[in-house]
Length: 522
Ligand SMILES: C[S@@+](CC[C@H](N)C(=O)[O-])C[C@H]1O[C@@H](n2cnc3c(N)ncnc32)[C@H](O)[C@@H]1O
Image (cartoon, rainbow, N blue to C red; front, side, top):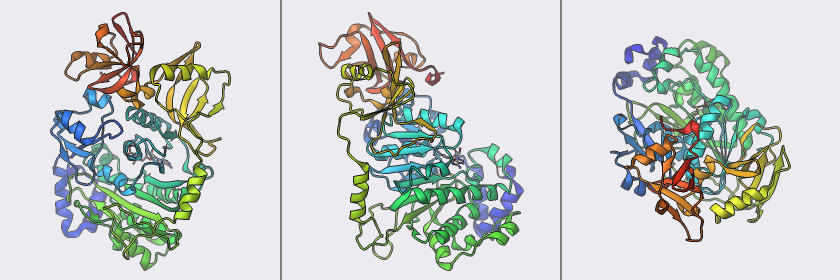
């Protein structure tokens, strides 16, 4: 496809890459790489590999990532519907590895739709802590919500808001922030040919303006000692090295944590901070570029570029930025992808951690209730449903939006005035004096959480028929109950090879299908 690439783009890349340009251009004649990431909220890597028939090859920079063959179409498999993996471009799996997320942390994914990196963060949080996942475009947030639910994430809050409005409620709130920035997308031309056709040289300047704002806004929301990962899928230095150097210049308490250039990653290029590689916008950028110190310029050597001619993935850029606290007490950072700088990383002070912990509050196991909108709802219906169907599942803080009920993660600030699409795990809704469990509730549960399951297997046609929305004939001996006292009739968690895919309602040998219309196998 090299011949279909925009002329101005090729000129720019030739100037940037010099001798390497021919290898770069040749990579456009190769096929693209396909990746999937195993969802460890649902299964382990070992377990998945033992049940999956797909020939998979590990992606070296992500322990849960694997290459697959395009012809195998894993998106068309019942395990996909069970949320056992997410289909994700291999290079796109790198930024979350660099974010170094741990269970219990507060993490923001600022530009999150359709949710590839959010679901990866959620797996690393392992159900503990908070994931705030946001995207400015309401149509794209729908896909984000679906992927969060499919992946069985219980501790995510989904927002559809302008980042500047998030600064007030979330000031100094997050431990980790991912800015997977909107960008000119030059690294995706092999994957998305339409993007190559649409590309214009002035996109670089347009996106650089957005990225500058996003970085500034994210810095306000990070706690001291916290970390931002900034990533793009473009090659233009204005959106990469130059953007980071400019940020460092304006934010002296931030520093770049150098990334080890392994797995075929290549270090960022300080010389490109001066944007000498630009095409038509070059003169404009030069005229307005702020003064950048030698220190900030050199720091970008610790960022990385993922080049399509040097590894098996598309073009990306990533930088790890740490907000230094400037105190003596240090913790050693254990992320092996990061190099040590002067022996040790500067890290968070224990007293500050303790303070942060205090702010987080512990409300105990008794659910508290926040009511927004309609008040007259009998929460007893929810508690009764949970007691009868999933008695050991803790649902924490209950939030009501109209008839819809959510379990919100603990320790959220007041989000009045913020466009909240999902204030937490969507449990279900109240209809005609009944509680109706949601699909998200089913996907967030495990088979062992519930008292009644129907077990299908991947080789059995009934699994696909369930996913198509059909009513199934299920004899009573196939309804598995945790105890013989449990009645046969009622909601069953339908599982494929032990992994939940949705609800069904069993009565007299028939399983009424509760699989949502918008999710069905077509
Ligand atoms: C590169 S994509 C994100 C991909 C996503 N991180 C993933 O892994 O699936 C960039 C996203 O930024 C969103 N976006 C653009 N401008 C934004 C802004 N000012 N604030 C928040 N999101 C924005 C776009 O709607 C788009 O979904």
